[in-house]
Image (cartoon, one colour):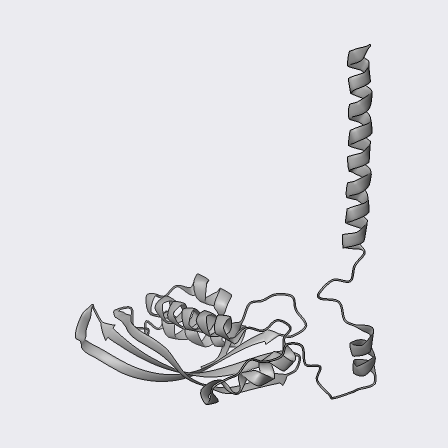
Length: 195
């Protein structure tokens, strides 16, 4: 008899926990998600309003990063420090992949147009597999624009590269690259769209 009472108590406890979890899930899932458009924003877009909605208040930006103010107005939760770190990593990966003829990696990081031009150079064996990085820095953010539902950020890079692990062969390079991302996509990936 005592054992049966315990089973009944267990069933009551499990039922209570289940009801509580269902109630909590309903509250959480019933809320508006972060990627849904607000009725106000939808109304502005339908009326053809050109005014941008400021999503994140930009932090204090130095003169060489001032263009990032536009990115803060266009992208929700934009973080220029994370973007810069990602851009430097992408630059190094793209250059190393290009030099090494790694088309598979390049295809994931480049727009189709840029990939095609990189692929042509690799196919002609005109890439430079003997070069490695010595140093890399970002000189300036040149431009941040929104075009055709894409945000494009143009960066001036400065790099030093050397040949066959010989530091006496260091060459200095200035590159201007543009990364882009679809402003309406939840995908956080940026692609190299211009060099």
